[in-house]
Length: 82
Image (cartoon, rainbow, N blue to C red; front, side, top):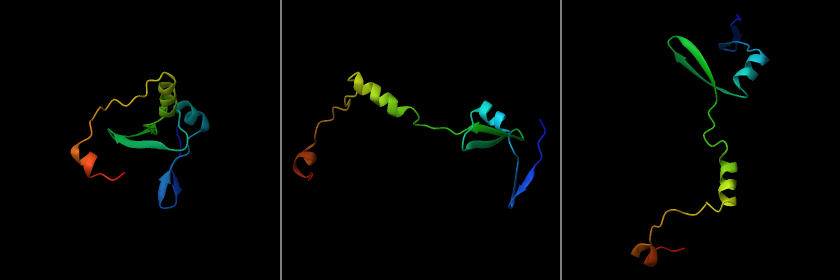
């Protein structure tokens, strides 16, 4: 599909048809990079997507216990003010 490059303020842009946006899974923003003289658009990375549901599932399984068994130090016992 051929599209025209259009002026947008001091920049330039293209219009991407809705069907292509949906097919690629794009929503409000995209990652853009250059690879071998090609522009590559990718859906934005959501590093914590799904964490809320995962934590709820852990709690339901009672698998949300603290694994760090660090014992209190002398500083913790005598100097630290809670």
